[in-house]
Length: 529
Image (cartoon, rainbow, N blue to C red; front, side, top):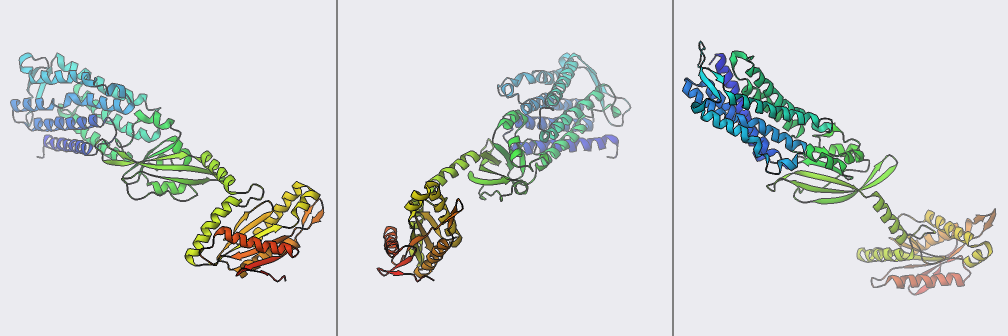
């Protein structure tokens, strides 16, 4: 077992085991990559070739060695065309590879196998095959026949074609794919160089080095599968479609690691660089946004969607984020795709339309319709939680005179002046709306009648003490107030506002610039301080 041949046999067997493991891994981890079958066949045939060569080296007689050589050719002639087919799938020759016309790639390998099996009848492949003299263990030499050269030319031609296709698409490919392409190129070039040296008689002991070199190529494939997700992400055949998409797209594996992304996604998330491949989505996402994390439910079996506000610098963007499962042909989940659709224009338009529907254009407070809608909600909540709720209704005094004397533009300024003062006196819970032309309404949750009366009185005093200045002239702007409280669960919003309106009318009747409360069906004045 310490002879060089024995050590060589051990390494060859290890190479065969690695090929078998790769074939099994590829078979049970099928992805959407269309060339996966070619990869499975290539690794499986490499295993047949390698194990056959190991038994050839261990053979004790010429007859036994010739038998194992025939076994080797069950796999070896077909490896190169399978590798070419794999590369064709990878670079996007889908029309050719999907047309079921690729059988011609295997015509010459099939003839080669037939020639080897029937060589004793025609000697077209080996003119002669014999035991090498003066060797510690039985080894064979041979005189090649005509078809041997045809087979060799076809094998080298297939390998050169594979390398040509890979290097042709090298510059057109994103850097995140180039490590995969380099792995494929080395996996083809290394055995090709070894086979060339063998044909030229430059190998140790005149032995075929390719089975050992296949150990190196299997290791390269394994490292590439682990580090770059080779054969689990979209091949460059789809890259032109992937890159032309206006929406940002990320491809994740089942561990939520980023396996691929397009340029649109990189523009949305600045931290998406080739270094992000293999990292968790959460880690990259946090560095890419200032507006919080991207979260979906933990159930990977369902598609999910959410809208996200995204702040970059001084700009605000809105994206609809959609997560969908990436399915294998057998229906198993292979990962997820995250699509980021820019809906900024649509969302801003929606906000504008919503504002137009809810906000009064002149004063920028709620309009009557929205104020009534929200007040009903607050009234229902107050009844449910048994908490106080009050309403203030007030009207700008002599507003028609302001319009007639100073013009409608000054009248508009007067309304804005009233709103600004009210906002300073109202807390964040208050609902403030324009009820009519110069009439305003306030809904005060968690506020009883006396507290609401004090709020109204504070607003009244501030209005009276802060005139509107127009063209260097002070214009007195005052208001009359009516206040009521929701005491009964069956009291409607309209009834409450009607009560407040009665109290407001009393304030106007008694001279304006006053606050009156509606309590138990009676109107009471708030003592002015």
